[in-house]
Image 1 (cartoon, rainbow, N blue to C red):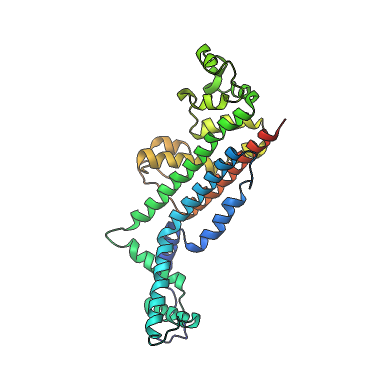
Image 2: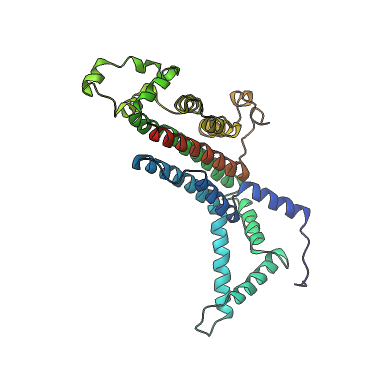
Length: 316
């Protein structure tokens, strides 16, 4: 085959490449998303406890991204290793490491053998991913499972952040407890048991948040509780409310529930939410673009909550 000519990609090959790109986060998508996550968060917080919570949230989202990109990254590294050792074979007899030019030559040889002349190492990665997808041992379900579990972990990172910030915020500003009384879940706070007051020496001014989150009836989980709670604590601040009310965040929450409780099988309750076009009985499919979007939306919503926590902490 003439190496100077590009071999046209067939329609079937193009469809395979498109299918793989929808199911796997590619290495070239890693750095922009990694940077975007960090940029959405305030770099510094008003206390060391707040800073620790912020850092844990950032690390959790970065970890999700690393896991999602791992299948393609491992194959890409394997290709680089294969190129390196073949370059060493061509370079045998010398003590020098193979040059970049030689590795590029090997890259061209391998691409030509597997994908036709002129193909890139990125296409070689896609080719090997497509081979992995068609294998009996792994198959397409493996790629879906990575995206599903990464989706669940993305929601969990947000839910943990939204809950973990409540105690230190209320400990810093106990007067904010009154903002929670309008929420049905927290209405009973106004009737504190006398034993609780005695236990704390009739002074909860610096520990009301710790006491609240320790009570099972005030458990902070689920999108709707988080919405009510942070809408109250934000006192109508549009930056927080707008980010928490985004339809993409709601979709993430509902899909997380479907993955966790229904193993991705669409049920009537999910369909009635009208967030997409799936039908009852179908299996939920998560695309790589979905996951990258969820990471962005969660980073922005979490960043808004962190900024609001800073404002509350610094407010006199």
